[in-house]
Image (cartoon, rainbow, N blue to C red; front, side, top):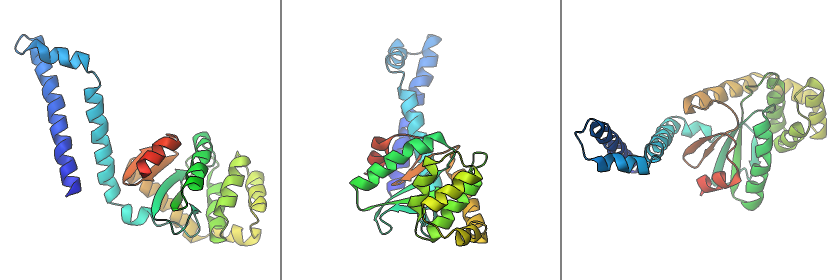
Length: 229
């Protein structure tokens, strides 16, 4: 019912906006009241607002197709409270400078909300990122995802030497981690995350799902906090 109501309002807004636009075009031909054209000239953001609302509604509809799975983390790939009832999903890449910049936002959100569970989706889209993504998931299996995650960002870029150093800093069992990083379960997780990102229409990292809202880009802590609310 909530989705139907949102669609009805969105349809009404789109109809209103394009009604104004259509009337404005007719007014140029002398067939409509000049007040419509004046209104659009005085309020140029109305079509932008409607377009944004339409994009957000479409993103929520796409999310409905994967939400049963996207909130279910790979074993251990969680920051914050693993049992938290408030959930933020992040798609991340260790060679992405905006992901690195967003790390402080996630740390702040987790520190402020003991009920927050951040589900981490490794999405290595930059060249040379896959080895680090695989090691991060291997760290998750040892209960040390966050330790590796933060160590890896401190040691970027993701050269083999830096990945190994981050793994040691996180206290991983290195031999076990290497086996896990090469496992089928990790390969499947990376493929699933790519499929999720494509389904949601994400074009890069970081990308987020907060509440029922997919969000692309490094949007800052306040935007994420607002969406979680």
